[in-house]
Image 1 (cartoon, one colour):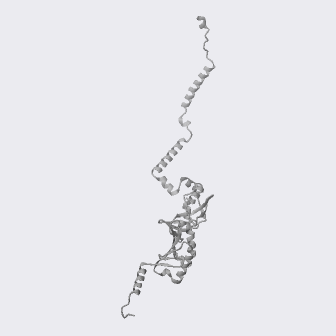
Image 2: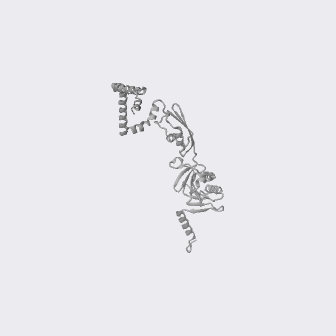
Image 3: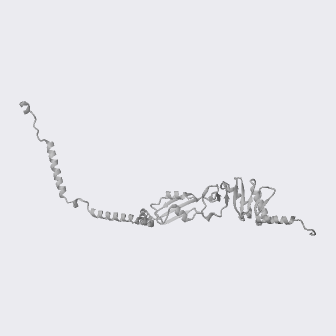
Amino acid sequence: MANTASRLPVPVPGPQLLVGERSRRWFRGSRRSAIAVPLAQRLPRRIGTFLALSFLALSIGSGAVLGGQIETLRATYGEPKHVLARLVGLGIDRVTISGIAELSEIEVLVAAGIDSKTSLAFFDADEARRRLEATPLIREATVRKLYPGEVSITIVEREPYALWQVKGDLFLIAADGTVIDKMDDGRFARLPLVVGDDANKRAKDYIALLAQAGPLASRVRAGSLVAGRRWNLKLDNGMDVRLPEIDPAVAVKRLAGLESDMHLLDKDLLAIDLRQPDRVVMRLTEEAAAARAEQLKSKNKPKKGGEV
């Protein structure tokens, strides 16, 4: 036993223990040296000024938001990014618009989203084009930014062709019958008016009939499509003219001739029926019908004896 114990190795400090001891001594020295340096010397220079200004800006910004000043400034001068861009000379100084006929320049600017608070740098030309083409009267639009301060807008309008009244609503339509927009102003009151279901698709036929009416066309106020087959004309004196389904243009010419020869539109008539090619049927007003009946009654009354 004793001999075995005497042969056990005795631990001797080696290089690893020495390195560990040196590391602990360096760490303790480093802690002491770090603690010994004042905090003010270890912070970046002017950090206090930066923090003070940041706190001031945050306070002012918070106060402006809470007090509603930001919204007021935005409404007055626009978005901050637009304000900055205008300050460096990237505002919109000029807008050129071409291709307008029915639209006004103000309507185009509003549709494109351009006003005095918009800057060229942050103006979205693609979005403006989409907004313009969403306007019913505009079929196609091109928008370009021309630095340093110009926007160029070119549009192609849909041409208003006629007005269409159906179920109490009035619409502006194109030549092919496509609805452009709901009629909400008097700008297009001069256009021909068609009335009834599917009358918008037959507007060209109606306008062709007006071309056959000669001077009488100016007294036609509307054309009503009846059962999708034939037209009734409404005149400015309230009179209705019923046209045939076949050869309505011939009937219109016939009406123009009767007006020229007999001045029918000055008579007490409610309606003129031209649906039969060999006759004209006229409907009198109630007053005219009563007067006519009284006239016939007097004419057919038996004469007293001795009267010649």
